[in-house]
Length: 443
Image (cartoon, rainbow, N blue to C red):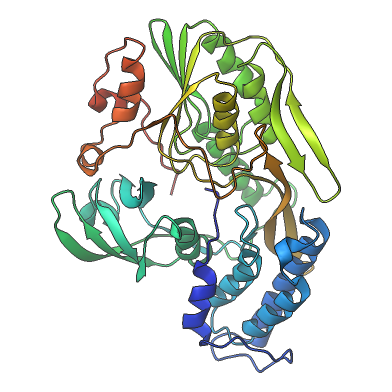
């Protein structure tokens, strides 16, 4: 998922550190619960965040933020942290101050990982439980279609949803989540969902042919498998599910060759959080028989057009693109280019509005024993062919169509069923919901 930072983190700090912002720049004694060595590591991570943004952020004016003053302000806040979770939130809040969807912190991996056992997503302007992992505590307490009203005491809204999920899961890794819910029948309840705990080694050996190295290779291969294209044929109509653009461009080429043989192609980008720009260009290159403009990339140094040249095999038939709130970044760019060029019909929900180019920067603390962390730093804004950016705006579908809570509870997919019906294919919403089963990562 790409994260949009819309103001939750500053509000959180009012609760954690009081209403006033510390003005002193002098180091204070560490608070109980976080020793000096741990605090020094947190200060080092924040310094690296400051340096990476200063050197590599696409806007040298940082959207009007005084970056140095902001750094010192959050550096002082670190001295009041009483836990790693609070420290990580300070570092993320420094980055979130620039209100950029692709600017965020990759904290060090924890030795104890927490898996909540369910997924939730925005549908329209409300948040719902969308997937539940079998065999977890969530499976005994949650139901598909439950509306999530609050998460750990925060009311869930479209404006703070991505911030909140990143706060609770990306930074904190809590052993439990507290929810206020209402089911499709209007019944409210308050529950606590226990996460599944996974223990890992505190130290990992990546030298030579170590087991730790191969474990990470295996995890990467599993990610690639889950992100693969999946296809379903219905006569002269093909449904092409693309879970992510974080795959090699060649995998797109192979699927495009099959899509080119069909009269109608439905490209399902729901839940696709984006990925590589080269993979996006590869997909676009097979959808046009002439050169098409992706947009203008605005970097720290210049503005230049991004043009995609056509490439065989060419998908000459009708195209429908399905999107939802979790369609972000590259998937939004793809949908908008086809929409602007009148090459496809876009169906579904409003997309995420998290559309920037970014690069990842890896960092490490220590010498022989290292603690790894990193940052996503925005390298460019993208202006579409109409001169507008999709950041914070997203793609508005040509046909707004979202499932009802009851349809979610029954695991139906009325959107895909509707899209197929437009091409004369009859597939009821129940069968459509089973077409591409969700694949959970291994615990």
